[in-house]
Length: 114
Length: 112
Image (cartoon, rainbow over all chains, first blue to last red; front, side, top):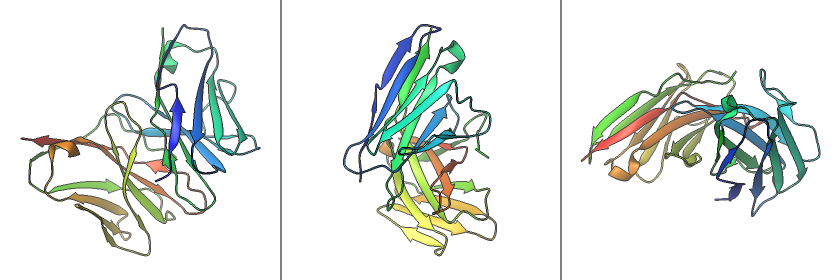
């Protein structure tokens, strides 16, 4: 299957700082990327959908100024958690798909805000 | 909207037995369904999928059953092995959007 790579896999940051998570499609062009958040022992919650070259579409209740998403190329989308606080600590997962494929998931990023 | 569980139900099975994991999906317009396996600290791993024009699909040791009448999906794992221990999620979507909505998940524990 297609490969989606997320970086970093783990990150610890101080409260008030911003953190950027990258999601790359390694062997296909991702016209659409999705960002999910997962709390411990819970399911994946869709945060936003981004199409290459367009603004992201955020799900209800997700603060777009808090979670900045950029999908500037067909192989890269970034999620920036701005002014992070401990409650933003979570597992963030991206997925990517081309026009003709289903979505493939990255390995996730564990964010810990201290 | 998204499905977020407060806790994960657990299914414990003896090694070598068959496992059946169930899922109720929410949107009658969904036409594509996927089962994922998630190990601790990792992203979801594709297991098997099924489209709404089918009611059964078989893979290697796994079978997915779809009952559109009652909006129910199940994953059957034959001869369950210790390596099958993980959390299993069903996901639904429509082929027009591919925006996946995940179920609450089930933790599978394989007992030696």
